[in-house]
Image (cartoon, rainbow, N blue to C red; front, side, top):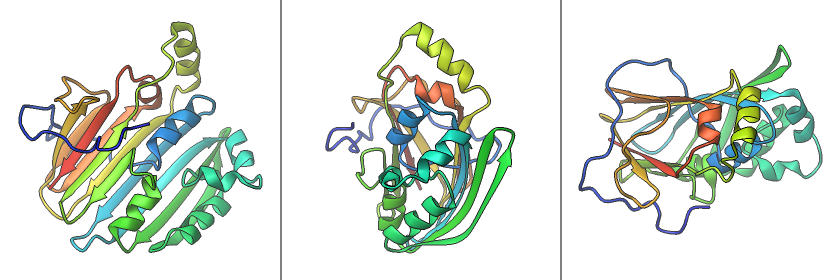
Length: 235
């Protein structure tokens, strides 16, 4: 959980910024804290791309790679409370139905090995719809389009047991978390620690090219963070 006011960060000081080199395009996954919690018990991977227009509208393209047991879980009555991390097409439809200003444009589902791969494209009419899709609580993600700023919080892991880490890291091999934002202006990225100070480093690969921000990290590295990290994107 992130305390209230956590999204206020100092503008002074130097924080690590993304390099201006090209990396593989990826995207963002909804509800970061929930995503990490589910990864502790099930194998998941996400690859998404978000386009934001000047008026706060935009589009979301996302692909979820889920272990087969998660798809079955999502079909059980009552599990829609776990959304917007979907476990099947029906979950994607429920997500669009419950968020005002969000529209599901297309959806696909296929099997790849033992995994279920879900693809979807949404449009959102406002920053409020974008925020509700990613994290209605505002604790893990918030988009302030008029203020030309977005904040993503990656929570610290609650379990650093070396045996458990080794076991789950093996299970998460091949699963990753990636995101990309296409913004209505030249992008900048900075990283902060849990106290709001400049973070000396961050896991994974991050790159900025013009108005696009791209970030990717192996899921195991994200799950076993030894400190809370915040990614601030501005333009």
